[in-house]
Length: 490
Image (cartoon, rainbow, N blue to C red; front, side, top):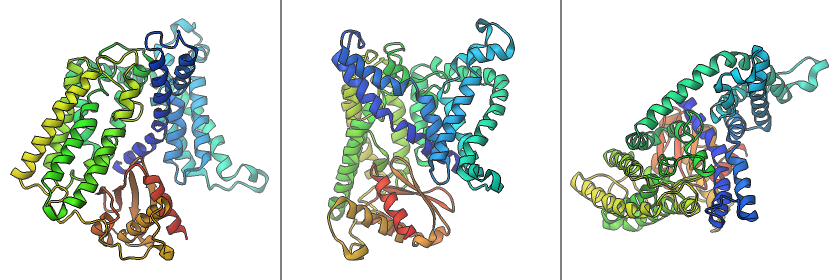
């Protein structure tokens, strides 16, 4: 079950990855026309509506993206099946169709069917389509029907299955939808406390990768909150909408980089150079893009008490921002890029105060991290044997003896070292990746060499089970995964 949820979390990142495009378009549009919301400028309206085309149709993006991500071989037939599933459900359960099926006026149709095109339904469609693809993509029909065999069969099967699912949802969706709304409302009713609790559990779930599932409840239209969609669409309440996003900016732009500085200052003298390289790269990624995993995985397992402290501070940050109603939003994560893009959005409320809060949190992170590391002798990067110089295995030849400094050669080198550390290509059953992690399945975990994997310069390793392991590479993980797949398939 845990592995399945992790796959779902990884799959959710595919549709989420398009949100930065929407953020850029709408951010620039609102910057041009912050008061008219596009009504006073043709260019601003063009940009805002272009970004809205993505934000307003996130449900279908989830249906396609999740179906593709949950399929075994990431084939386009799975994505097409996700689209088929979405079209059938949303058409059959639209208010007009439901009114016909129940022989009642449209005005009497349950309001739940007016919200059928949600991310929740998109995720459900994607999961069903992905499962059907995995089950039927290799099915061989009799010769007379051979044209419809294999992958062509999947969208057809999906259409019939989703007709049945739609009939079930005709009775199930209203109570499910109302339960989700009640859940979302109960969290919203907690106000700033609810935002703080969300921030705390978000960070605590990072090691498992299940934080994406939690995020979907608050950021998207799963439980009626839709914090990201409403914030960028300007359809919420100023000072309230964005409360599940704003508190991350002080942590990701200031707190974590300050914590990285504390880890560098407390590193052993002979390891400061290596630690500086790791902390600078990870700290900059956190500040500029809001990608925190390379930095968090550098200490979450070697100093779990420090990571729990970080989770608590994140919750406090969301609580503080929500209490004072300081809001800003993001399309990808709470880094400098999204902060600038969201600064002039209609629902951004005193976003400059998040910078002030960030400076305070930078001081808290630095001095608290430094105190805890020294007081409890925590094995943070540069203080324990687990942190190795990335050149520890540099004497091993790369394929074809190529020592070029080009990006492709570097990805290839990392892939070779990681594969060797995993026990060789014959020990690797599957290779996949999400936004920053390699998600790998191995046949025998006992032959995995953690030290050798880390020598590739990765941020950390997470052994999820006796066969599943994650390697935190960073935002360029896809290229390393591609090189590993090439090496394995050669």
